[in-house]
Amino acid sequence: TRTYVITGSASGIGATTAETLRTRGEKVIGIDLRNADIEADLSTPDGRASAAARATQLSDGTIDAVIACAGISAPIPATISVNYFGVTELLTALLPALRASDAPRVAVVSSMASLQPNSPELVDAALAGDEPRAIEIAEGLAAQGALIGYSIYPSSKRALSRWVRRASISEDWAGSGIPLNAVAPGTVLTPMTTELLATPEGTQMVDAAVPMPLNYHQSPESIAYLLIWLTSSENTHLAGQVIYDDGGADATLRGDDI
Ligand code: NAI
Image (tube, rainbow, N blue to C red):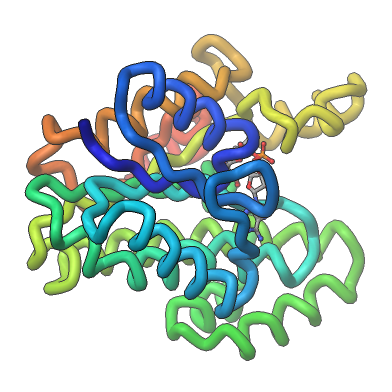
């Protein structure tokens, strides 16, 4: 039995991943705002610290894998706090418990939205680890209305993908024998997208931004199965990758530009 810590375990991709692993007999410690083993707010430094301390306690000090799914897509400053700092700071705080495992693995959920127009300034502030500055930039974007405010989301995911790329080969992660990767989904049918996809106009807007020639909109299972493989002991060398599991959206939009 492996011990998994899963953030965002109360809904969508996180809930499906947690349920699948529990069904397979693994031990899962869920973190979410509500309806979880650990109820914590990952938008704040205190919430992250207490979640990490509690997870370390509940796992008796040994965590085999962390799967970070918690995230929000609203055009508000909290989006950079949850999607970037809520992942990177929590993972860093969980490093000692991961190092105690004989096969530690980590996977995070980014998004194909990381390819959408974003704020390089916000991306850089996040990667510099400067949360107050990142929030200040995000506040400026949010104040310009929902359309520009939306760019906080792609910025948070661009920063997260880039962090994975950089951190994965560092002493902390590769040096500790921990494969660290990201999965970038297309349009997944979860509570995050329900409202947007409820009208033909919303669906048209989403599909124009996220073209999915292979099998169209995807189930949370389509992401959960990949997260589970990435964090299994079968993965010994896949590191630093952002895997677009998106029905061909990335291949459509980016084409040869890789
Ligand atoms: P969801 O809304 O169903 O689940 C997200 C979970 O994160 C919720 O249970 C929520 O309570 C939790 N969460 C939000 N803020 C939190 C906080 N401050 N502290 C602790 N937990 C918090 O959404 P879904 O679709 O399952 O999203 C999971 C991840 O996948 C997110 O990172 C999202 O950005 C990403 N994603 C989703 C896509 C989609 O089309 N649904 C596409 C690409 C990426």
